Length: 116
Image 1 (cartoon, rainbow, N blue to C red):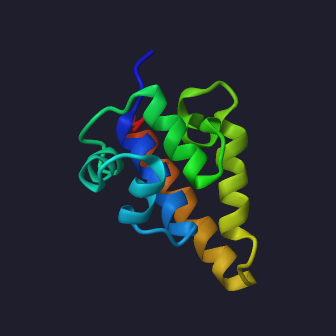
Image 2 (cartoon, rainbow, N blue to C red; image 1 turned 45 degrees about the horizontal axis):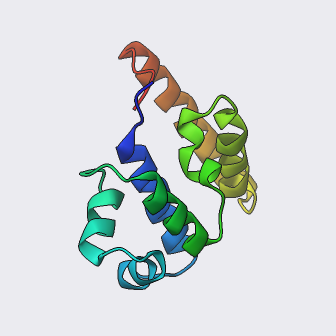
């Protein structure tokens, strides 16, 4: 199994931003350089297990939240994320978002894209 470091980086960045942390602050809390964190978030470099653990501890999350695309139960986390995104939408927003999701699903399947 090969890990998708781009998705790992995107998840770290998403959680960091949701917690309103700068790259400088997270890198300080994680004991890595801001440049290294930037490279991790952009998927340009792999991260070690100790670095992943340090980042997750600093973000106060478990590693499975970051690695969920590589775990068998990843659908659970993705569905939670989808539910959170849709949770505060009104009827019009829900209708538009559902339509866009359906169109995106069709386009992905036409292009035979199964994994990022």
